[in-house]
Length: 209
Image (cartoon, rainbow, N blue to C red):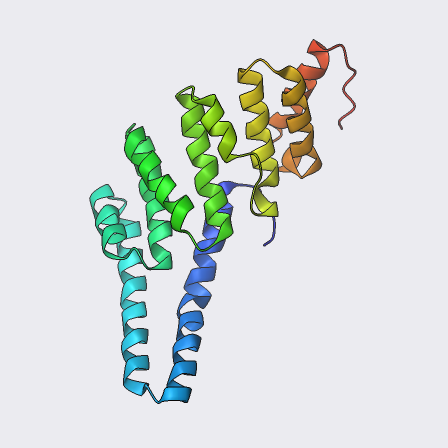
């Protein structure tokens, strides 16, 4: 997957993929079954169910209401759309300062998402919440290695933040450099400041552009 500069762009890219190919991918499997077994009625039923599922997800997502998104997730846990809904639900819970509920949703996405990018995104957001709660070791365990290249820089930068909070400036500098080497300076100009500050603290001349 192409590397995107922000998390929201990554989420929108995944949503667009599901909107464009979700029905077709599932439909292709069903059509294959129909051609082999003659399950034409089954095919039609499944395609209708998938379309209804997609429409229900759009309605719940556009409502921006926690109750509707929670209801959708609970009723459609086997759908790929449920993980997208749970991500948005977690974001709403964070905005409401209900971090316990947000963590529950993010853990569910990380455990159930079929898309590795969604697993990475859920773990990244969960780790940030844990950092805000000073659960540094647990947060660090979630972002040591990303499943996808698109999240390498963001994982590494957060590792740097955590190591800095743990007062390990050497480990923080290594992590920040890894983030910079993987496109982190493009997505977050603030990363250069973090590296420069550590360079000054350690008497090292900064050489980043």
